[in-house]
Image (cartoon, rainbow, N blue to C red):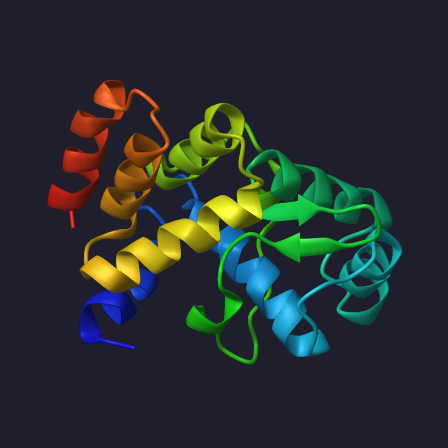
Length: 177
């Protein structure tokens, strides 16, 4: 992995200084969950039991909230039988003592990243599953060596989606780093 991508992943997983929690904590939570289990897919039951009983991060009700928020934000993709992260969990690292805060359970308190918005747009208007959209974005990013948001805009544009409304937010996101 090159330094640019590694730096992005580390940045992307930090908490925001303004009191909110970056979507990165939720991504980190999911990555740790799947990596510690040694799996890239889980059933919903396995997800719930792992979060609440194996790791004792949350109550069963809160584990359901975590699942719902993760799916709503497009970070977990539901198939007929399994749950699968829509992002590459290998790129996210956390300490062995990592324990998510309760703030990850609240969808309202977290701002949806521009990347997540673009993935949703590609999924909705481009006719791709979120997993396929993320894979295509990752290939474009790898091939061109650009930021993930730029790759998402390019994929959307290639699918004939109007991305004009996303250009300025992407620019601001990239320049804020």
